[in-house]
Length: 197
Image (cartoon, rainbow, N blue to C red; front, side, top):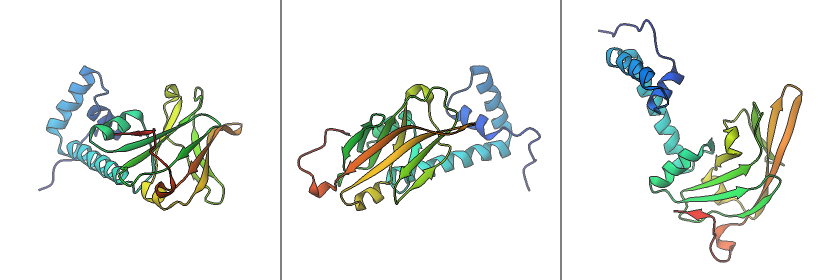
């Protein structure tokens, strides 16, 4: 026997707002009441939660890079992950590495983002790649990237350059350029002050 189809399914964005406790008390109550009586919307919420769990697991294992927010970084650290962070000022550079026991490496690219509607991240050079239309919080003044730690561990001594690019009706505008001077852990002297536990 199949469950009856929902006449007014809740939109995925609304389900996420409900799960993240971003709704008013009144709206939260309406969604919750609907979910108690609707198998289809309850299943849709569970699918979103399963997807989120899979993405979190992939980021934690370092098998995928992602643009994330500061709240997610704190949750990972709260869960006991060893996180190494590098903050790079606009048009600046940083010496960086990845330690054998690091679980995640975070890059914080600082930039004024007020008025920006769409943002791309461009890796400059032979390994050029574009992350198009990435999520960002203009008020934060930075973009937070969880890097692919497995790939970082394979990098030789090298420089990786990234750009934040605003995509506007009149064209593309580079907001800042960020250089990562990478040295493999075994070739470094001493520790690194930018790691967090």
